[in-house]
Every structure is written in structure tokens, then in C-alpha cells.
Length: 383
Image (cartoon, rainbow, N blue to C red):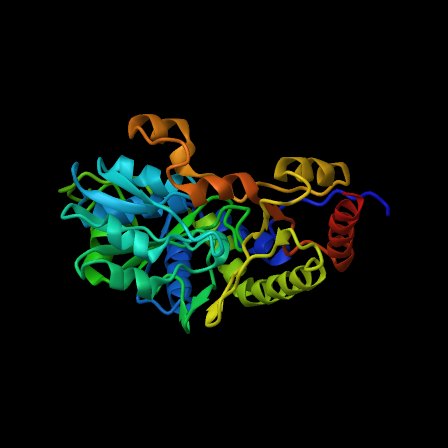
């Protein structure tokens, strides 16, 4: 086999995106403006939600949602132990306390029964993560908590993913999406906060723009653009630029096609790698549609090779891999601050050590997939 270099992820950008970004450059409206407004509307329609607010990242979208909720020190937010660190960080930003729960080793998502056990009188919210593009069991999570507990979906990886006929972003009270280059659609950096709650939407819109009572667009297009708005609350600068939104609008038009291709190659991986008994494929339960932002495998405990050694072998072939993600509870900041014993969340710790993402993205060719599969099978044969 001829050695190749296959990236773990690569954004799919074409001439349409390059043309689209020229418009805000020509008009001079480069910060949040008409392109952002159009992107928000189109994203909301695509995910069957009434409201969407573009932000600088998924992290800031999550923070915006929690801030609009009015979290205070002493409040608790339940988060999964196996997720990217930002899920817990946004709780800390609000002065609240993240309460960790373990995850299902098959789906990688938070265990609803663990969520129910973790609820206290101080619980204000739960952040279910649709990890790697598979939706969390939102109905079971909703049933596990009191009705007044806020559900904020961390849908960073889940643009276009579905759960029981409903889109990610429409399953809780609000949701946050990521447009980082590793995601299916990208704006470079960027995020989106979706919600079904009118009050939350209005308050989030104010908080996004420093706490201004009137947005920049409304002020400049109104009769008195020379007057500054009032600022009655402490807000943030979480505005997306029109240049990013112009790219995002084109990317959103590609979403269905990109997802179809990813799902097809996920099927190919699953079928052709099934002969490696110790390499477990990602799960997609009935009535779910995985977005496959990442194709994350799991190395069995009795495998003849350790995960890191397998990653090193594949790197020699030019195949990039990554750990699925980390157990936040094992990271220095959280383990020290909350005195968390190593291994307290057993599944999260084990998944941190045994998950492996292999390349799956829309710039890969059929030959790239064939090469990746052949290399994995070759390594397995040699063990």
C-alpha cells in the first residue's frame, strides 16, 4: 500500500463560500449584521426551532444560555463526566457548581438514572451532551428531573442529528452548536444558541451585545443612529461577524449532503471493521440519526494492543487518530477543586483511555477510506 497522509478532520470549503464572504467585505458590514440575521433564521428553520442566536463559539453559546437563566453561586448544574472541558467550564463561569455524572459506555452519553440520582434542591439545569453527534436520551433525562430544571443541550457535534423524529437543538429548553473547523459545518470559529423560549431568546440577545437594550443593526437602521442605547444589565461581546455568517449560510445549505455522505461511510466502516472483534464500533440506536461529527471506536479491555500503541501504529501509516475526548473529572482543575478521586466515574475514565476517533470527513475519497480500513485490518492481523 502506498503511504498516505489522512487527517482526522478537514473542513469542506468550496468556491461558493469564497464568493459569499466577499459580500460583507464589499458592503463594509463586517460585524454582526444582515448576514448573521439570515443565518440565524435559516439555522432555526433547519432545526425546527423558533429562535437561533449566532455567537462567537459553542462555549459562548452555552455560557449565554446559562447566564440568561440567571445562575448564581450555590446553584448546581449536572454535566457528564466524559465530555470536552467547555461543558463544565461554562458552569464555573457563572459561579455555579458542576455536578458530574457517569456515562453509558456504549453511547458515550450521560446516564439518565445517574442524572436523577444527582438532583438536589439546588439543581437548576442539566447539560446533556450529544457526544460525537449521537443525541442523548432526552426523554429519559427529562423524566429524571423536576419540570422546572432547565435542559441545555450541548449540541456542539450534532448539527442535523435527530432523536425520535426531532432535531438536536429542539429537544430541551435551549441548545448550543459549534462551527469549529472540526465540525460538520464551519464558520472558522462560531456557535449558535437555539431555544424554544421567547423570554430566554430576548434576554440572550441583550446579553450577547454587551447588555445593550437595542442591537447594533436596529440602532444603525433606525431614525437616531447617532444615539447610544441604554445598558441595564452586564453583558458580553459574543457577536458573530457577517463574514462568518456568510460562510455559515453556504455551509448550512450543504448540511444534508454532508450528513448523507458521513452516514454512508460510517456504515462502510462498521461493516468492514466488524471482523476486528476487539474494536467496537459506535452505536446508533433505533429512532436516532447520528451526525458522525466524529467516528469514535472503542478498544476492548482484552484487546491485544493498547489504544495509544494502536494510534502510534496507525500514525506510522499516515492515519491521524485522536482519543474520543477526556474525562473532565480526571483533569487537574476539576479533580483538585472538587477533590475527585481518580476513577470515581469509572466509565468516563475507561473511555478516556480506550476511545479512538478515526478519520471521517467530507474531504476524504473512497481510496482514503479503503486505505484506512486496510491499515487497521493489517495492524490487527499482525497482532
